[in-house]
Amino acid sequence: MIGENCNLCGACIQTCPVEAIMLEVKERKRDLSDYSGVLVFGEQEGKISEVVYELLGKGKELADKLEEELECVILGSKMEAEVREIVTYGVNKVYFYDCSVLTNFRDDPYVDIITELVEEIKPSIFLIGATSIGRSIAPRIATKLRTGLTADCTGLDIDSEGNLLQTRPTFGGNVMATIITPNNRPQMATVRYKIMNRAKKIPGFSGEIIVRKVERTLIDRTSPRKVFMAKEEKNITEAEIIVSGGKGLGNPEGFKLLKELADALGGAVGASRLAVDEGWIPYKHQVGLSGKTVRPKLYIACGISGAVQHLAGMQTSDVIVAINSDSSAPIFKVADYGIVGDLYEILPEIIKFMKK
Image 1 (cartoon, helix red, strand yellow):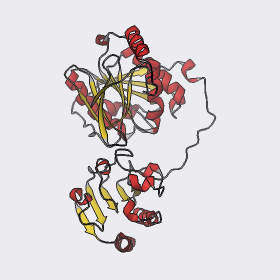
Image 2 (image 1 turned 60 degrees about the vertical axis):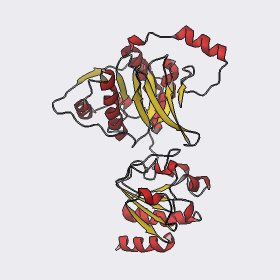
Image 3 (image 1 turned 120 degrees about the vertical axis):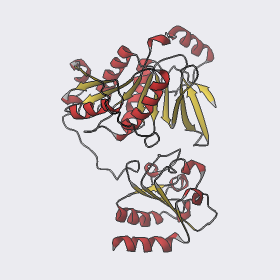
Image 4 (image 1 turned 90 degrees about the vertical axis):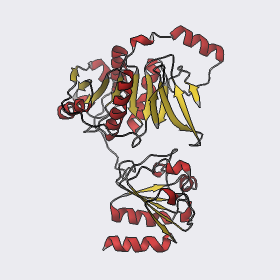
C-alpha cells in the first residue's frame, strides 16, 4: 500500500480539510533540488548508541543509490574518539557539537540545534533511531521544519524518482504500509532498532569532522541542577538472551518461571502480544511488529504459537528454541530446536541444570 504523507503537522496526528491541505502544500512547495544527502542522528548516552551503526549502514546504502553523501550529527562532550571512529564507516561528514551542557539529553537544545543544522545543510533524508530519545525529538524537529515524519520504520528504500520509501507496520501489525513524502524535504523517519544490518568499516576511508560551536541562547533556557537516571530492567532490544512467554503460559504466574530462567541465563524476559493484552506483563516486554524487534544470540519461546506479527519481531535471532505442547504450532517452522511438551515440566529442569 502506497500512501502520501500530508506534510502539514509533521507527525501525522491531525486531520485537515482537503482545501486546507491543498492550499498549504501549494503555498509551501519547495525546490527539492536544494536538498541532497542522507543525515543520521548520532544518538549518544556516554557512548554512541548501537542503533546509530544500523542507521549508518542503511544510510550508506541509500546515499549510494542516490549518489549523494552520508552525514551524521552528534551532540555531546568529550567524544572525540567516538567521532573519529564514526567517519570510518563511510560517513563523509560528521557535525560534532561539543559542549558539556549537551552531555545529557534535553529536548529543547537538541531540537533547536539539530533543526538549525538541517535548515543549513538541507539533507534529502534524515534518519533517527526509534528510541525514547528519538521518539521525543523527531516529531518536534519535523514540526519545526514543516515536513513529514514516518515513525517506527522497518524498511527503507529509494523509488525510481528518488523518493524515500518508508515501510512501517500499521493496524496492529496486520498491514505493512509504504509511505512517501514527495513534496517536502527532508524526508524524515524514525527506524526500529535491530532491524537493519550494522554498518561495516571501510578500510582507508576517512570522512571530515566539523566541530561546531553551540550558541548559548540555544541551551541556556533550561539548565537542570542534577540529572537522575532511573534504574531499569534489562532492555530486551539490548539483551543477547531472551526468554519469551505467550498465552500458552495459561496465567501470569508463568512469567515468574520465565524470569527465573532468564536470570539464570543472564538474559531478559520477553512476551507475545496476547500475553501483554491479557495484562500478564507490561508492554515494554512485547516482541513483534506492534512491540519491539529483537535479534539476540538466543531466543527461547515458551507457550508462543508463532503468529506472523510475533515472528517478524524475532525470527532474525541467531538461535531459536521453541517449547510448546502443540507440535503443529507455527513457531516450530522457524525454530532451530523444538521441544514438544508441558513447559511447566520442562523449564524447571532447564533452570535446575543452569543453576548447577
